[in-house]
Amino acid sequence: MNILILGLGSIGQRHLRNLNKLKINAKYFAYRKKFSSPSLSTFNKVLKTNIKKKYSLNYINNLKDIKRKNIDCAFVCTPSSHHAEQTIFLLKNNINCFIEKPLATNFSQLKKIEKILKSKKNIITMIGYQLKFNPIINYLEKIIYKKNAFLGKILYVNISHGEHIDDFHPYESYKGSYAATKKLGGGVVLSQIHEIDYFLNLFKGYKIIKSNSLSSKVTDLDIDVEDVFTSSFLLKNRKYKNKILCNLNLNYFERPKRRKIQILGSRGSLSACLNSQKIEIFKKNKKSILKFKYKKNDIFIKEIKYFIDHVKNKKKINDRYNIINGIKTSSFALKLRKKIH
Image 1 (cartoon, helix red, strand yellow):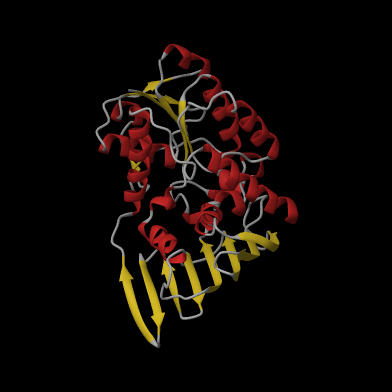
Image 2 (spheres, rainbow, N blue to C red; image 1 turned 180 degrees about the horizontal axis):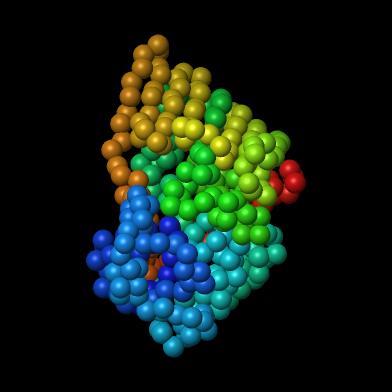
């Protein structure tokens, strides 16, 4: 296989490391405009190794050159504002592509992608929402739609993700990062869009009948984007004949970091923590704990393996993972931003 990596920052290098771990028999190409990111370990610690030599990379100076490289698939790992443009280029050149979130940073980009997709239905695509491979998220998905589950009818959901932006990449200043910069597609809504994506996935059987959102920059952080966001959704499901109030909260300044999902039902409740990797269940005044043992990188490996297997076998990827899902989630997130800016 010939594999192209666009961007060699934290996530680009993670995918490169994981492809090596999976022992993919491939020749690797890389396209990068800036060479500011150092060689990184799994835990984003700076290494003294040379990236190009370590992975036997072949650098491409101009994307137009890929037409002569017979690229089988590409990974778009550049700043958010470049994702759509590079995805469109890859689609036009019939290259299977894995795109990091978010797919786009404005509606115009989404329309262009939708238009080109109409004639590129056989291209294999996937969006980097790795939390769909997280066992805790998978467990919650089963519980929500399981008949006679211990929760009973779900009444209330609270989803929270708070983490200080200066802790994202310890090896660099947050000030010039994509997450902190408007022109690079930053802001807490798009940078922490994972929560929006799994919210839409977990409650895909429900219809949003009411919603309101609010965001702002409330800290002294040196950024030109929003650092806090909150939204409330009233959901309704005709089949289960119930309504759910869901709150979604995101921020760039919380320490220690928090990533939790709380679900309250008519017969029981649970609190899932993605950081401690456990779910606390409360039922009939009794508490039980489910522990999930996995390394953070495990879900990235599962995600990449899924994509590469489908590319090798020329098999279409399920709509919950592919570019169709990317359009849906990005569109939803952009509509939320439109309401509040």
